[in-house]
Image 1 (tube, one colour):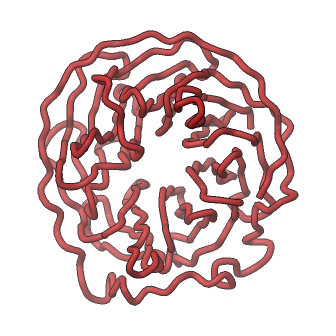
Image 2 (image 1 turned 90 degrees about the vertical axis):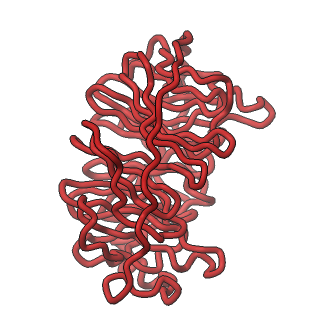
Amino acid sequence: MRFVSAGLAFVVAVGFAGSYACGGSTPPPAPPPMPTGDTLGSPTALAPIPDDAAAPSASAAASAAPGATSTSGQATILLKNLHAPNALALDKTSIYWVDELDGDVARIPKRGGTQMTVYAGNGSPFASNSSIAVDDTDVYWTSQIDKSSSLTRQDKNGGKPTVVTSSTFAVIQCIAIDDHDMFWVLGGGIIKQSKSGGGPQALAGGFKGADCIAVDDAHVYWSVGGTPENKFTDGVIVESTKGGANTRVLVRGAENAANVHSDANYVYWQSGAKVFKASKAKGEPVKLAEASGKVADIAIDDTWVYFLTPDAVARVPKEGGKGQTYVDHLDTPTSIGVDGTSVYFTTRGTEAGKWHDGTLGKVDK
């Protein structure tokens, strides 16, 4: 798929460095094994989603295909010359991201302005599976340096970071938060810990290929990409209560499922070049869009699913329909976020630029 360009307008801001300090860590307990029986069944027996099942009607599952419309807004590049930015998060006033090549966390006002380094690393780059989340007071991020993986928490205005947990035996990834708790993936396990203290709790385990977490008022959802030996056809979307009870596979045959999101009635995820949704009540997958190559990230608002193609920012209606693009000809877009007025995105940059030419941009909805 090739989308029509919406244009670029450039605004550059100047950054400055912050301070760094180490914190302690509490390794979580080993997660329990995957439950057996009718609730979950056998992952090896799962079948891939056929195209006719994924798209029950042309109107409900129209692909974001060539010829998709272009929006009228223009993108504003808030920052240039970033070092492999990824893992974007938003609060009411600011944009937060991870610069993976530098191993630090930074922010900038949504309107543009001066970059602030919230957390300055020790110069060691992070691996490419970082994630980030923010609430009213703190910023949370996962990172991996060599074989050491960690979840770190810090006041948004700086100060001493606290390592919530660390691991050398499995990767910590995809931090998700609600008003009271933190949730993350640890290898094939789903872990929960109160923001106010106490030890970590293993909600589920044994989900080889577990990728990411979404939460709503009462439930936790996670995407499981599947296994190479089954050609990833054993990918699933799983649901449990926030206490870890009633774990069940909500969607089966979700090949290469990744980056699950949730609203009141549906879950959404990316699968290679495709974007899907499924009802929380029925679990029936619907293909919303298909890009020309692997989707890098997705985000949702009340009406749209936004996604990154290999070189563009695009969206498709949640109800299905024709896709739209905001801007294309981007150098490896990596992460996306939305608020009530704008869409925000990062690009990793180019190998020729040694990944020092990444950008942070936004475009009005």
